[in-house]
Image (tube, rainbow, N blue to C red; front, side):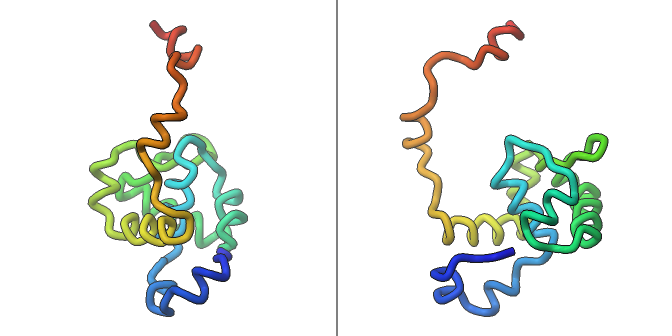
Length: 123
């Protein structure tokens, strides 16, 4: 997985080495929590061998950190489970350093006032 130059210059070797393949996979899925991906798509996005990604996904599934349906993988929606996984914390910290911490107030400010049509269909 590539990193920006600023992260390269300002992050220690130890911090960069700390992210294992499962941490990188989980970090990618967390950053794209509204989507599901095939293992090869994840591998391509984080620049890791597909076999290593598949192994990582299986291990993450065993820990109930990801969900699997057909050939697609997505991060779990169990926030408590994710909070208990230290790799998720390290990946989140690295992404926050690279991209900045999300501002919840900013999200709310730009959120639509009307529910999505699919929500109305369910009611």
